[in-house]
Length: 554
Image (cartoon, rainbow, N blue to C red):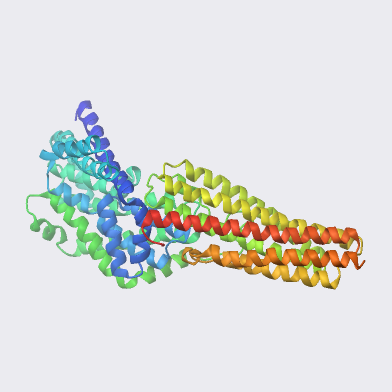
């Protein structure tokens, strides 16, 4: 094999991988934003889940991309682990489409296909046409790369040393190891299977020699998801384990089948003389049969991951975000990324709201009866609230830097406003508690009438914040109207109680200093109501933007 053949081989591999990347990018533009809705609505049923996973992977031609997306969805809480298992199984079926396309051997018209795609991108000024043009051009470039690799490896037919090395793949462990290692390096089972088919097209390898390499390639493709799961929560890591265990179990099953039955001969007899088609068929049969066998045991696979990665108490450090995962910005695959980012921000905002609500309640408790422990806890949580606000700002800034459509960027930016309002509510709770500390230090307190009025303000504020404490974005529909009811009641109460305080001051039932403290406390509660309404407005705009993007209210 000459140095020029090596250059041609590398160039062909580059075209092959770039073609796959173009197809994946085209899909992201055409349908990436819909992926979350599709998965969310259809994965509760195991058969539909497998179908959806297979369909998405067949289109983007990368089980790695689908699995990385699923890991991200599980980490963000968009998908449960029990739903993820079906999509992962389907992804393994869908990834076999590349091998089947290569087996059709349409390399002769590959330049024409690429030209058609490029023409669509160049001459049709339309976003959807551009996306489909990328998909079509990517397909053509993929086959052009395939032809280059085939031609580059043809001289290897004359190399006895190389043929001898290939024959060692009859040893299952060597074949599996080579297939897994090579696929792990290039992070694409579709590409590695394509290279195996290119060897077959060149007449270098036969099915009995290739079969164990093929099994190893199914294991090696898991490396991308393993890398994507680093730094994610334990459920996301379990999703990766499901993918890995699926392919390891399938490999064990088929190694046994291949060693005790004439499996290779049977598969060769289906398409005699066409080794690339034989390889594609084995790849497809491997994944379909493994899925059929493991489908009844999907939940057992989930339980297995819990045994491998059990829950551990005390793992979470408080000064960490609970839902934000910065790894979403490092993935090469961006399908569904905006949905993951929006969900993570929504959940982190609700996490922040939980601490803010608790501090507002503590601030009233301190007025009623000052307690050093409660005051210290309030200040600790205020520090965490400030930390969350900064992290949400950083995360949102990173998210907006990604080239999302304008509406998606606007949606993500609205979480900044919500976090800012929550941080201000936390500050008002601190203001109230600071006055309580001053009163306690001077051994003073508000009158029973004033405390009763503050109690009513606290109850109204608590109800307003409770309206914002939702578990699902669907509950945010009509949120402004719900919150506005309590915000108006807080305003009315503020006016009435301020008037009552003036009467008490006139009747000399309180001191001017106490009156000022009381009025400032009422103002803090009134401002909390204002910020709560601001958050409701931000949430309402988020729902409007999501409706515009997805065509529904999710």
